Image (cartoon, rainbow, N blue to C red; front, side, top):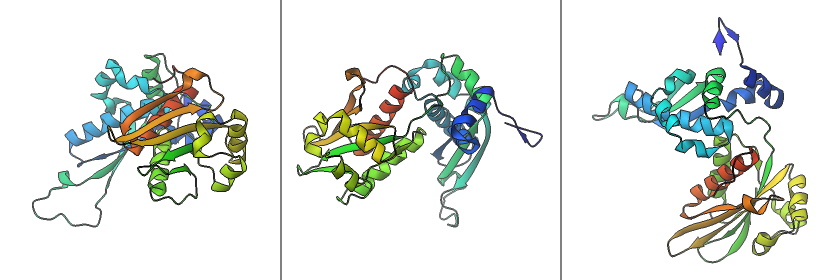
Length: 274
């Protein structure tokens, strides 16, 4: 929070500095969404979405999205925001035809006040999740043609670049440090898509260390025709059996969001996802 040009941090935010550094601690309380203009009613919708996002981002607990108190506070989300900015996504493109500024998409960035947000979280008996391990995502894929492959930082299958973008975007939204291993690292660890579901935890641990991580988020996503969509199953390597979760009948973007949000929920010390 800014007071007279001096940055003032809450106690929780000061603890965050010890783990993240000032820049990353500030990022923890910052969220972004897209609005269809900057009018007050559009701004209010954006504020509400940013609040929902930041509550999960700061705590790691996506179950809070079902809390009625969050829905109530979302109508007054601006009370918890320290500052915000809009950026016209069509900057440089003149307004044309009957288009008004309210029709143009904008990026809305909201920086929440750490002290006010932390006080709100205490009403749910939640607090900021500060110790965040870097995970290595170990993902096996069986595509629409039945071909099996592993998603890697340098894999070249047709959908791999889009899948990498979806996975990293999901992790960034929750401020969860996550990297993908290289094809060589997967090979050295002896991991492949057909055997991933029963992979030896020691191999997964070796891969995580080679890739610079502290643990592995392990998942398989398989295309099913009926009903059409991806079926995803996830677990934390070395985790208990009840830390397994998944989703079915979705696009791969949702499959990766399910994996990342479940990992955040488990690692932040909350109830395992269903």
